[in-house]
Length: 158
Image 1 (cartoon, rainbow, N blue to C red):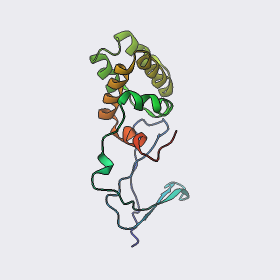
Image 2: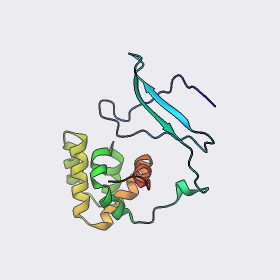
Image 3: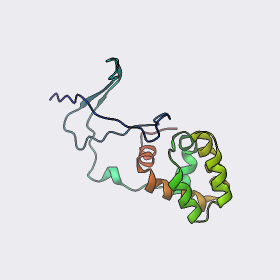
Image 4: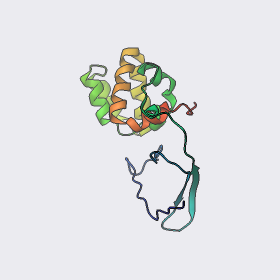
């Protein structure tokens, strides 16, 4: 079966910054699909891939992780530094749970680039131990579930 979608609008969470990933949910596919991204302005093909259906037991995609939030953050530290987006809500959560002080929150916010903000935040939280890492994981799970889900994939490797 060939189904063509002529235009699908993609948007960035933070315009001007690199989009770390895009997730496409195709539901329970019976047949594979072909995805193509074309530069609308110039009409040239930018990216193409095939997505094949996978046999998953019902509910497998939403199964809870078998490891702690602290272990998750430690395992994916490098990827979190590169991929975390808007930290506003995460910083508020960590300050509310007394993981970060007001001064530490301000130091994170003063960094000039997204990656430096992420690096500074991760350094502060990691230095405070596993309970602080658990709080970070909890906040990320609520505020950026797509990133957490992406990093949780069994096929994702470091």
